[in-house]
Image (cartoon, rainbow over all chains, first blue to last red; front, side, top):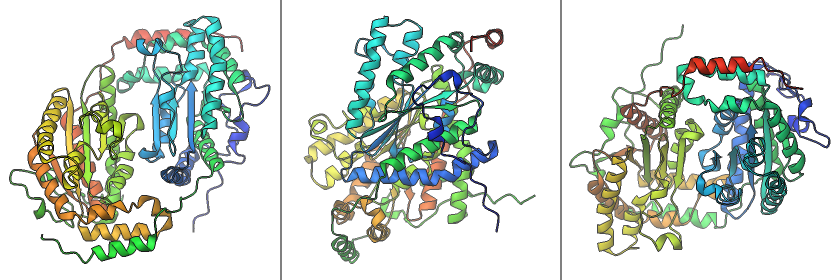
Length: 293
Length: 293
C-alpha cells in the first residue's frame, strides 16, 4: 500500500489569513504560503482531494434548503487584475455542482445601474437559500476603483462604507454567511502575468489595455483596499487576505476557507416530509402496470 | 508505453440519436447504447478524456464573444423524473468553466409567470453571446405536463407548438444554436431509481411524491413527447432522443452531442484589438516604477 501523502496544511489557513485588529495590508507578503507544508504539485492534489468534502457540504446545504433551511454562503472575491480570480473560479468553484453555484461577475456599471444607488444591482444577486454565491468583483468596486479614480465625490465614498456595513449586516441576519477575500499579488508578479498574456495570441482576449492604467495606480489601490478592509471587517462578514503570487497556494487556501465556512454552517441532510414506506408501496404497486407498448 | 484505449465511439452518436422523418419514440430502446463500443468504466473515462476538448471549445466560444461574435449554444434537456438530468448536469456540464455556463432550471410556473404568455419567463433565460445555456426542463413543459394534465385548453396547447417553432426560429436567426435532448428511460428503470432514493435517507430530498403521480400517466407522457418532437423538430433546432437506462451511456452521448454542435459553430480565438508590442512596452516600462512600500 502506498504511504498516505503528508497533510497539505499544518495549520488551518483561515486563522492565519483573517484580517484581524490592526491589520496592515503592507505587511502581507504576496510570496508567502501560510500554513502550507507543500509545493505546486501537492497544491493540485489537495484541490482534488478536498473536492469531495466540498461537494458533500454543498449538496447538504442545497438539500436542506429544499425543506426550508435558509442558510447560504456568499463569497466576495476582490483583487487587482491578473491576480488569479479566474483561476480560483475555474479550479475551486468549478468543482461545485452547477446547481448550487450562483456566480455573478460585476463589470463597470451600465448607465441604468449608475442612475441607481450602488447597491441596487447587488441586491438581486444575493444568493438564495441553499446556494453558494460567488461575487467576482462586487460592491467593493464602488469604494476601490471609484475612490482611486475619483468617480464619486469623497463624501459619497464615505457614505458607502457605512451603507455596505448595513447591507452586509442585514443579509447576514437573513441567513447569508459572508466571506470576503482579497487575492494579493505583488506588482512584479502582475507584470509577469500580463506579459505572459501578451506573449500568447490565444490569451490576448484576456488582456485589456486598461489593466495597465489601473496598474500605474498601485499604491492608491493598496490604500483603498486597506481602508475598505478596516471599515467593513466584521465577525459576520470577515475579510481574508490570501497571498496570491503562487497560484497553487491561493487556490488551495480559498478552497479551505470555503470548506471551513461551510462546516461552520453545518448543513445536514433534511428529514423527509413524506412517509418513505407508503411511497415505496406506491412505486412498487405501479410496477404491476402494463402499458400498451 | 501503455497501449491507447480503444475508441469509445465507433460511430458519432448524434447521427444515430437524431430524430429524423417518421421518428417513433416507441421504437427507441432505453437500454440501447448506439455507437458505443464500451461499458460503464469506459464511459467515465470517456467523459474525462473529452473534457479537455469540450473546455477548449467552450473557452474559444466565450473568448470570441468578447470581441463581438454572437454565437452561443442552447441545450434543452427534457425527461421523465429520475431519468438522469441531474447526473448529466453534474457529470457533463460541470466540466465546463462556470463563467461559460448559464443554467436555468424551470419549475412549475409561479402565479406571476402564469399570468403571462408561457414564453415570457423563457426569453430572459436565452443565453447571451459566448455562453452555453442549459435548460433543465423548458418551454416544452408547456406542451408536456400541461397537455397531459389538461392545465391548458386543447386549442391553447395547439397554439403553443407553432409559438415554440416561431420562437426557436427567431433566436436561431440571432445566433443561438439550439439542441434539444430527451433522456429516455423505461418505466421499470424509473421505478428502480425511485426505490433507490427511498432506500437511502440521504437521498430522500431528491424524492417527490408527485413523481409517482406523473409516472402513472406514462403512456400519456410518451404521446406528448412524440407530438412535441414531431411538431418542433427543425434543422436549426433538432431533437435527439438518448437512451438513458444506462447512465454512463446517456452522459457520454450528451457530451458528444454538445461537442459536435460546438465544432459546428467552430469558434476561433479572437484577434486582439490592441497592439501587443506597444502593450508589452507599456508593461515593461511600468516595471521600473518604485512605489513606497
